[in-house]
Length: 365
Image (cartoon, rainbow, N blue to C red; front, top):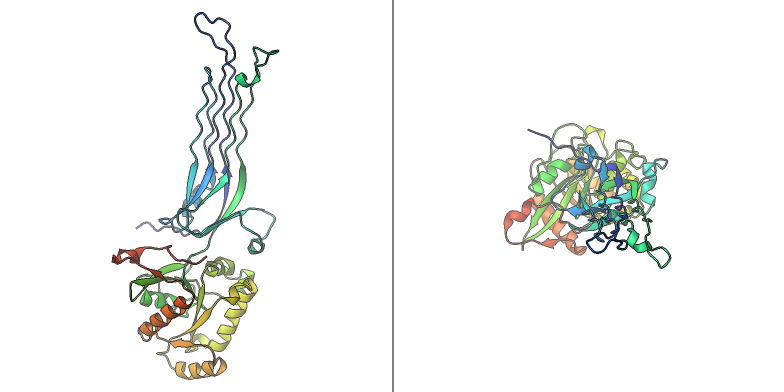
């Protein structure tokens, strides 16, 4: 079995095609011994175009080929024949890809404060990353009354080039946020057909997983299982930035808490710390609608901790579940549809159930 590497951030070098050179040529035919200049223009170099593709889910293809290069235009020819323009180089990237102009001296943490070059949110969105150079002019353009046999021509323009950073930000309606081993992956398995890895050790999930949740009346929503955060994630500890950026598009955040307090955790402190990490990473993200999912209610001390939690947050709706025992899952799905409906982010699905395997059709921006 071949395992595909998941890549959600990569630096690439791109070079558009150069324009073709103009031609120096003179008309030479029978009975026309001294014809005028007839050198054609060079062809245009190929553009590099990024296209969001619904069948691509990460940037692994560019990991092995980080140099993107388009073809050059061909040179002009005699008889005023122009060189052929190069076809554009189409690079398929997953929907949700953000493009930055790379600066090797800048820290990655500062990139969230800068405006990106492009944000390809929906499938088939396109962005011209580098434009190809214009073709050079043939000598036919240089003739005049004083210069009837010009030998001048122009070289084709060079295509644009640069170094860029591609960053994938997962598109989902809701994101599961919590500490490692809080039960996010198990929960995603229960509410969708996704099959993330589940194991009794931290950081089992190392990259986001998307699940499609089915609702009555043929409605659906996408939910992302975000890898577990740790204290200091906003400073990029424990790959914090790599994980946090995947919830920037989610309109609803679901904080999954270990309400049993296993591993010596305190659910109230966990929520406070998670909220603080998100706020320090991006204050706009901390203003998103959020709900609390109290997991592991099948373990001892969970009921007592839940009572204390609700006393601390009386205005906050808490859904108590046990993802391991599948308890409270249907109630959570009903509440999830209600919460997403308040933000109008659910989609009506086609009656053909084959849509359930589709990924990347969320409406987050």
